Length: 276
Image (cartoon, rainbow, N blue to C red):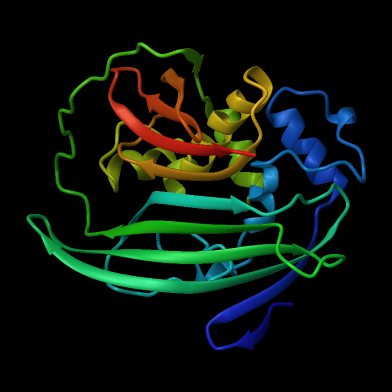
């Protein structure tokens, strides 16, 4: 049961369960048996420990669970991930007992050409109970937006696909379902095609922003042998189910710069990753 340990901070205790870790491996088409208790959890795989447990009757109308923090009701019905940052100061291990502290860090309301909107920032720390300090801190920023206009199509400049390294992936319904299920994320734009098309006026199911980040860090880990110490991600445009995405990676002074392009070459996400 969550505990309110200080104003606006919620503490939960969880388990980096081997079964959950094996399921993440299976989702990524890796051998689940290679993930054994006591081994370091691959950096980026901690997303399932961020899952919300909001009661179904208390979900937002779009199904978003709040990820451990009650989202403010600002009369803005649409929610999209705008960015995230993660700083690792250590590793979680498979089988660890974990303390997660979550808080609503900031709410900023703005007015633009399309009317009112807001940015909501959540902050989470994950600490193995065997350690005094958190192993990682993650900050997530969400955009809360007004109802979708009748037409939500915006032409964007296509990026050049040139890069030192690249990988092409096509997320499908199974991948979106598995990622959402592991993170207990019931946001309808990832699961309900009719909702995405008729209410959000989107062409198809939207690829989770966290899944985009995970696929990018897995590309670094499995193909470039890079271990992140910190990352900063900006989500600029949606990626859609069954449409290929291209991950581009270029070395920079601190580590790697990654760009994620959609099937038209539009820049969908940009990540700066510092290497341990």
